[in-house]
Image 1 (cartoon, rainbow, N blue to C red):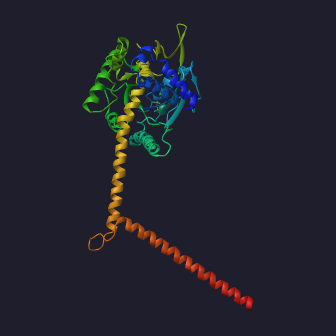
Image 2: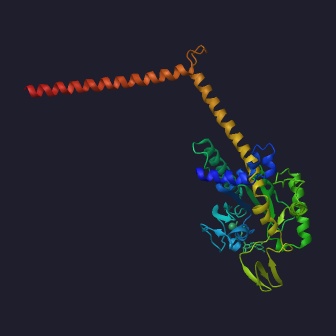
Image 3: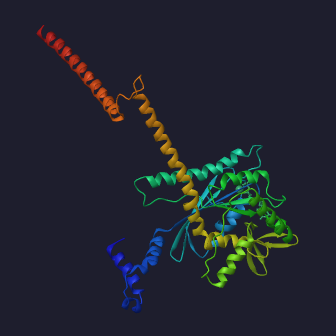
Length: 385
Ligand SMILES: Nc1nc2c(ncn2[C@@H]2O[C@H](COP(=O)(O)OP(=O)(O)OP(=O)(O)O)[C@@H](O)[C@H]2O)c(=O)[nH]1
Ligand SMILES: [Mg+2]
């Protein structure tokens, strides 16, 4: 920040202080939120979303419907690397990043599409791909945080995982429970019922109840929406209640734009009519998008930082200290005499090692000098002849 910028920020903050405040014993820290706000806006925001679930449940289609279509047609948006509108079966982890700007606020949004499991007899490999990806991002962040340039760390940690449940089962299957158990201590899980257009309203209701019961019975920690502040306005509180009542979100995805009553909508055309993805009576798509993009993005990031990353960090630190302890123990054992008494300290041992190295180098030097002398003598004698 240049001196001029600092002046502008301070001046703007100062201008916001009312005359009444100035008359009172004004200290000035009331401008802190504004300063923080400016700093965050300047830095920009990162958010990463991952989709996980069985093959063919519409993960790629939903990601496309949520973010990659013409959703941001009125906003500045850079090219989406690798964006393809024709969705094919996902076979490897696909990471797509886009920079979105809205009213001067920059968001670097990354969506991680994963190959669906269920094709192979052993799903273990597909699961491991997802957990390994999450761990790898944590590891990278941990390394960056411990490095020299800590100020410009790019946060690629997975902040939210949309877990897709099929609409055709009675509830969660054993493999869903297994995978959720592998994920729930690493990432915020948000459960979605895929292809909700294949269910009637009462089937959706019942399936939601059974899924929630299974989650509770199996002690799976899905993302918990924070309590709404009591001083929030009634409209916000109502929106919050509706959002919580929707969990798990029953979603519909589509990559097709259709004309319905003169309006272009993202939808699915059936012989009996059109499912409008964004119609709240047809699916929870808009609620899910609102929650991810506008109302709970920061909370998802906070939980990732404070709970999941802290878990990972604590494990890392404990592993590092255990390793260091083992190494020290080894050094100590090496420095013990046969009678079990410590003859030399660790530092002494290192010094002895260095001395030995220097001695070896001196020997080599002496040998080289002698060889040089010998060859000189030989040379002299040839000249003499
Ligand atoms: N009925 C219905 N079909 C959908 C929905 N979303 C996607 N589909 C269809 O389901 C099929 C599979 O969709 P994908 O998005 O490729 O599924 P995926 O989960 O990414 O599959 P993998 O890449 O194999 O893991 C496609 O034919 C989609 O058109 C939906 O909400 N309802
Ligand atoms: Mg896919």
